[in-house]
Length: 134
Image 1 (cartoon, rainbow, N blue to C red):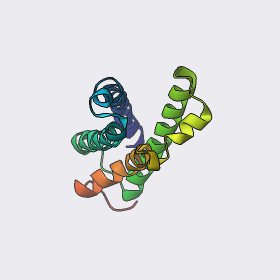
Image 2 (image 1 turned 90 degrees about the vertical axis):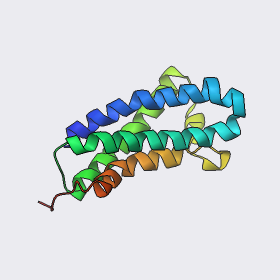
Image 3 (image 1 turned 90 degrees about the horizontal axis):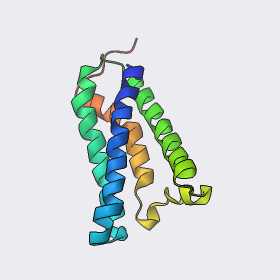
Image 4 (image 1 turned 180 degrees about the vertical axis):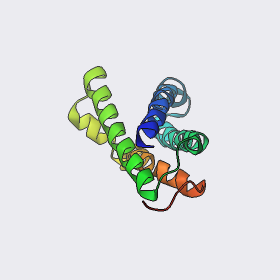
């Protein structure tokens, strides 16, 4: 189940990139970054949840711990991916990368990352996908 859940995370990555691109190129110029950042964060959380709700039922059922582990892995992969993309491809400093986690600026990235971590478990709970502990 864990390996297949990573495949689902890989499907979410292009959606997240598209969400960020739309925010930067379309939404921010229309409504300003102050409004666009939180809107983009909420939108990404909804996208992650919809993908989970649609695809997780096709995976083998797992225990609550399996779903929690999948979420932890997703969260780590997300932080690693975002950091690598920001540092190596967008040439952001480490300070700029860390600033993305400051929700007082309107950036909900910290909450998106945390939501990414609980999304598999939340989906399992709401979809009744848990099996008894092994």
